[in-house]
Length: 311
Image (cartoon, rainbow, N blue to C red):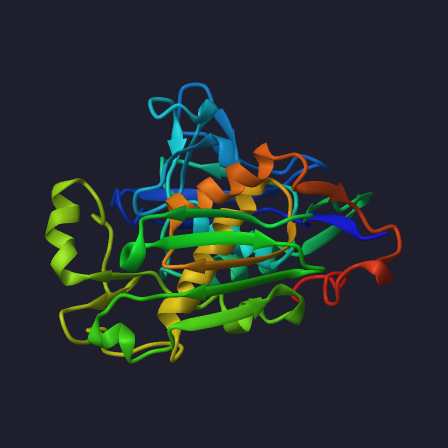
C-alpha cells in the first residue's frame, strides 16, 4: 500500500515575512492520517486553524493567502506557496504548522530551507492509504485575448508533471530559459526546483511598498532585477531560475487541492490567481476527477513509492 506521510518529530524556524516585514516563528508538527496540512495561528487570543485548501484562498496578489472560511476579514496566512511546495516535493500529506504572525517567513526566497527543515525532522509513513486526485479530463482556465492571453490547464497523466512558459519581454529574463518541464516522479525536486528564488523588479518596489507589500524583501531573499540585469552579486542559481520558480509556486498552489494530483499541469504566463481558479474549477466539476489509492505500490507512477528525499 502506498501510505500517507507526516513528520517524525517537530521542527522550528524563525524568519521575516516578505510582504509584512514582521518577525515570525514556525513550528512544524506531525499530524494524524487524513488531517491534511493545517496552519494554526497561535498568536491570537484563541488559536485559529486554517486548512491549506483552495476554497479558503482569499487573496492572490503577489502570493497565495488563505483565511478562516475564506473570509478576507478573518485571520489569515499569507505567502503559503513556498512551504506548501516543499511539502508536496517531499510527499507530505499531514502536518500542523503553528505560526506566530499572518505570513509564512520568506527565508531565502525559495523552498530549499523548508525542504531542509522538513527533512531534518524526518519523514514517517502512516498506516493509511495515500489518496490522490486523479484528473480524468482536461480542465483549462484562460484570461485575456491575443497577445495578452494567459492560461493554465490540467490534463490526465499517470504521474505528476508540470510545464511552464514565461514571457516577460525583459532583457535579463529573456536571456534565460523561458520554458521548463518537471516530472515529480524523477525524484529531483530538491535538486532541480526547490532552490529557485522568487524575483522582483526595482521599478515595482516603490509602488508595492506604498501598498504595504515587500517590506521584508531584500537581495538575501529574492532575485532583484533592474531594467537590464540581475543585481544580485552571486547571480542566478540556475540558468533558468525564473521559470523554475514559477513551477515551484505552481506546485505550492496546486497543493491547495488538498491531496496530491495525478495530472499534467501546464501554464503560459500564469500566476497565483489563475492557479487558484484552475484548482477551484477542477474540484467543482466532479466528472473531471476521482480519488484513487494504490494498494499495490507497483501500480503507482514511477518514483512515487520511495520515501523522502525521493521526491
